[in-house]
Length: 494
Image (tube, rainbow, N blue to C red):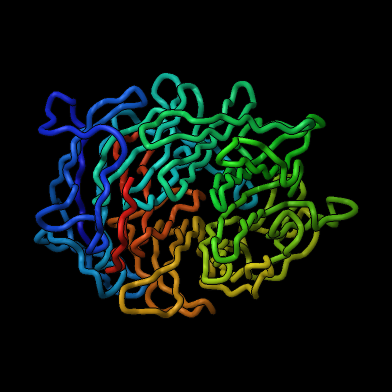
């Protein structure tokens, strides 16, 4: 495991400056650079769109070694060389620290498993770019809110920080193949939300306000928000509150070229407790997923008949029932979804005991949460639920998943991560499409973590798996994790 530090320092210290879109180039080793020609340490200048930072790289690494499949890690001295592109997951893991000019906004308390819990920091979104760079979206919280995007180069060094919208919170981020990107930005005070499209200098190209006649995006203390791009369209899936006082979700489409808005549905899962939205180019469609504590599964009296579940496309595919109360209490929570060759791999946490109706159906004192996998077909048909963990007395949450395509290995497989809440461990594993463990799980908490319910894992264009996180509200240190696949990608010239 290699750790690097990329510090934001005043512009007067820059040794050479770069302005505009990320540099083009060919990635020959999966990192976007070479020993004598890499882009690490690129220094930024200011544009009228945002704040630029200087990046300097130092190696302050440790080399964790596992003491067992789920054992703790210990550190040994490291030479600071690139992590290997073969071998176990922990050996391939690299974390780069990027210093930003302002601290991340605190997260809210949200409904989770049979009650509420803090999400620690506001959502952080990791989006690979076809030019081998990466966008990391966040909201800073000192003074007035600002939706921002950190632009990283192929070596995960900071190029610049784009200021997208002062006074607004970033609720989703997605990119097009040519480097244009969309942001879902939200005005908490006015209950308004927009999809805005930008170029890589941060110049706003279009803005589409998303509206329904009978509901608004009032808060994110319940449910989630997601933005995804595919087939020339942005999909926005987010929580709304009806004018009559109920909680649900809406799915909106925005054409990237015209900004025209259409509605997938104005009122979906209710209550919409957590949700996901992912695109699969091979299937040529989006996958919307929700966890609900009531509808569409419940009919009759809530006290005795309430039932929740994991549903696809509002009500078209039913993955599993979960205990729920139609009152915010729910015993399942979405983790992440990853495109597969012909569909998606979906992970979530829930209880293994068969769900039973009624508001007293789940007992947090005697029942616990495990991580499950369901393979979803390109026609949105859910596969069987396979339990990846079976840990009595330990609750797992914050699951995430990404396709894993290491060089020289063509077998379909995935990297899965989850958090053990009771013992504070962060575990990584490799699985096959049937959910069989191929490696691990191994505890990586000493060197890498991820956010709470933010679907963080993303497969980059070279096959590396990436994610980003902050340790605490107000932190200016963005941690960027990368699992080296050993693959390569010809970077797009933008």
